[in-house]
Length: 129
Image (spheres, one colour):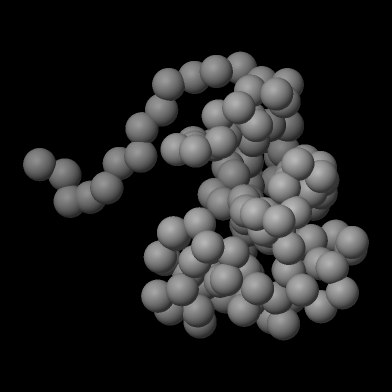
């Protein structure tokens, strides 16, 4: 397995992982997904097995203190092999920052196993009432 910065040839694999998770945003417009994964302040990394993308992480960061894990996914057949931890480590090293904040709907156990502080959070969608 190879860990690397996201490249254009990884887009189809990243979209497939998102679709497998039921996350519609990247699959709805892959070109927009590519722009998001390569936008200023974004670090996107992938785990490849040969040419197959088996995991990815998408982090936004100020490069100094704060980073936000926007998305991370690992192919279901490759979970519990340390891939997500490796992706997180590489992403924060490349993005810069002292910490990563995140929200999760499905992976609390994974994140609780990492060094962390627990905070309440919200995901807010405009327009606001």
